[in-house]
Amino acid sequence: MATKSTAESAALRDLIHTFIHTRLQAKLDKLADDDPRRQQLLADHQPDAWLADAARRVAQIQLATHTLKPIHPDARGSNLHAPPAAIDLPGLVSSHCLTDHWDDDVVGNAAALDVFKFLKLEHDGRSLLQRLLEHDADLLAALGDDAEQAEAWRASFAAITESRDTPSSHTLAKQLYFPLPDGDYHLLAPLFPTSLVHRVQQRMREDRFGEAAKAARDARKAKQPHAHGYCEYLDLAIRKFGGTKPQNISQLNSERYGENWLLASLPPQWRTLDLRPPLRRDSAFEFLYRNDKTLRNRVAQLQHFLRVTAHNNWQIRRKRARLLGEITDAFHQYAAELLEANRNGALTAGWSAHPDCRLDDSERHWLDPLRAHADTEFSSVHLWRDWPEQASKRFGNWLNGKLDHDELRLAQPEAEHWQDVLHNELRMFKEILDDGRT
Image 1 (spheres, rainbow, N blue to C red):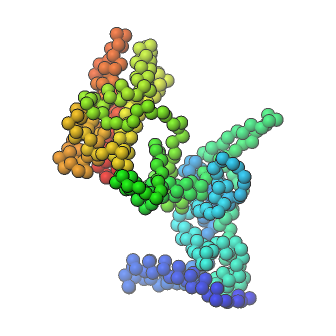
Image 2: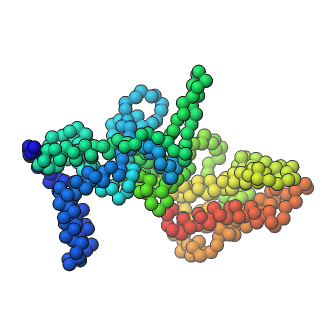
Image 3: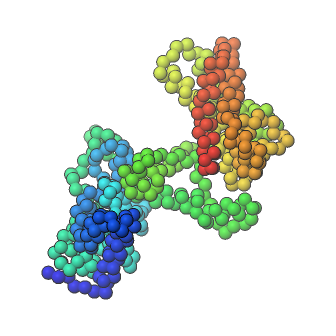
């Protein structure tokens, strides 16, 4: 039985044919005019042939709002497509907040993602997939003159929203026992809310790098009024999914370059003093030690722990590493705050060139790196000298001095151990600076 053509179906057919022709042309452009593969490509990209192949390959991918691979890349359980529903949950941010608009993710064979791009094509504000799910007669007519064939293709494409297997978990997936009042429990298998994460990261990216945010920051730096403010997300962490092939996790993960931005789940810390650079001090380590009570407590805890601990095992080493990590984190946090103050104009880059700055050169390069943008001599030294090594040595010697006690005598091996912990982080920081990503 033939389908009935309308102006709307004709427009949809043009949209479909243009998409197929564009893909064909991109492949033909890579081949010589006499390449024998051209004829096969022309045959494969005839509309009926391409649609039939796409209807077959769509089974290799699935639409999802909640995915499993971010939990563990080798997990083989189910992914779910659960369109957000309007639920009254005051104070809770979850996928139900996306009822107005959300981006579906795609999992499965990355080689079949062109089928998803086809289904995302829009005409008059509606995607082809949406029309297929609604049994749109105009789209069925656009797919072909054979109504039965068009309906078969529609069913195949529409099945992209469904899991083709029985819902299942996997040994590599997380599972949670959720207790019930009667002493029983639910066994929960959490999934990654990929659609929600994508929306949140879109918002954060716009807040951080959008034109409106840039204009507001420029106005603040110039000390000029502006129509609106801007958002800052402090202490962000980035978790990478998929390594060099983020598309193996999912389509939206690929669009995010494999990055999953993590907000700091930390309580705010009261700061009694405004951020200021370590001027009129010979050591940034001593400056922060005198002005940060938490840091002084951590050093005292490490000293006490080393004094009373005579034996050595993995638990001892883990606690010692934790205390040492908290000490070095305090200095990394201070350096990050100075850098952020340089970027937003709260502190002028180049403060280490002030006559009142008595810091060692290595500490100047660590704490005032943006000075290299305007100071040629400083930039040359910053690029070629191993200032992380020198700063780390100064830290090791400084911490040895702070830990010194009648019952605790430390020597060069201990100083070198403290030095190595800081040096690994400083070396990475220098590589980031050298790559121009600050």
